[in-house]
Image 1 (cartoon, rainbow, N blue to C red):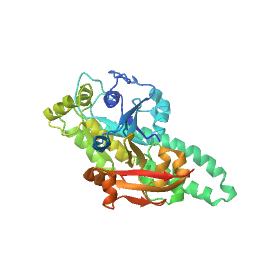
Image 2 (cartoon, one colour):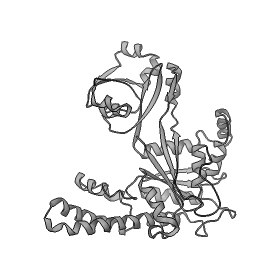
Image 3 (tube, helix red, strand yellow):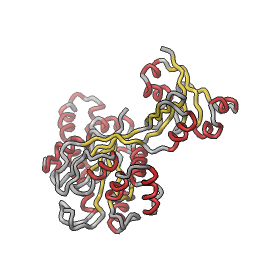
Image 4 (cartoon, rainbow, N blue to C red):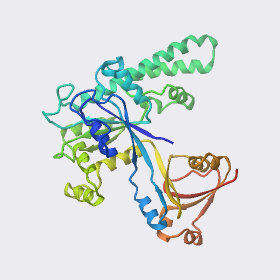
Length: 367
């Protein structure tokens, strides 16, 4: 299962540089002019997780497969993107394909890097991007409403509910509020109606304040972004894209650790961003572990044991019998599966068991 976070923002705010640092590559050309990125770059990134390291030390497996998440570098949007300005329609369609949005906002002064609007104004920058997303969603809703209203004469109750829901949603968007704040109070049937539209603003958001190396703890610009994130009940993160780019080019883990220490940081901004992306998508990690392989599996929170088994192989879900569950902390403390069993801490669970983060699982199945 693929989970994607789309990186959006105005041109020249650091999106492609951040993407390069995330993927430790130069696949996304970083240049000081708008529309440098046209096609979305997609990079698969390892989710930092010390549990994989600990399980590897315990089992010494032949193969190690960590959890991953995909990041998509989407070209810079400008005013009028929803009407096609700056190849906007093409770029907006790329956003539709991701599950969460990371909004990079420029929070530094630098006369050598052009700002597409000619000034540093985080509030305005955020409003430009979100207005274009909202306008595109309104266009999507209008097209659906036009079709639904023609079907009202059938007296279908669901069509009537659809029209009422979409009209209310239009009013909500017209106040410059994102769709995701409208859907929270809907019935399940109404949520299904909205979900079918794949709206751009019905996705979880993370605002990232991109600061310079002198303001790693924030500045007046970052404070503005944080206040907006707080108001929207959204995630917020401060990092310096330039610093992260420098860290990503260091060759060894020791060099990176030393660099972070010198900067007064415990964890790189990229690691924090990846973890935030994971959190944003409501994901968790369970493990299968043994001498052959230590494998971290990514699933949405709330998956039951058969669904989790299906991530390994469809046959595991079809023929699911039971799940043998060890907690990661128990396994690491007791140092072996045998010791966990002896302590009575290995649990046998059935089809209704909801898998938890850190579960070490062995599935029994029969096909």
